[in-house]
Length: 42
Image 1: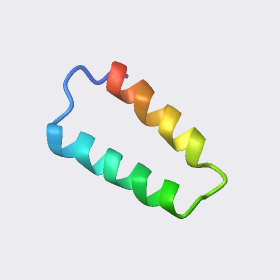
Image 2: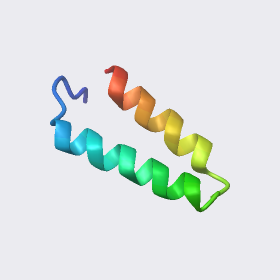
Image 3: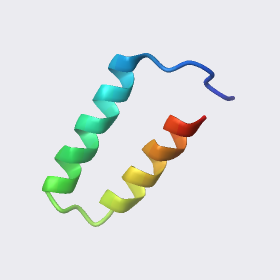
Image 4: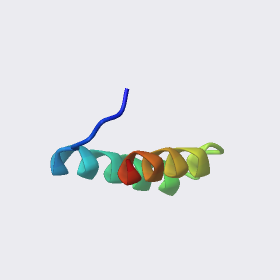
């Protein structure tokens, strides 16, 4: 189930999504950030 290589474009989409959610101050913003950090470290 592991992703060994992630396209830079996909990472950029994740990061842009995080900033969009964070700017809206959604309650689950911290959870989304943690999820992306996990993906980024795989």
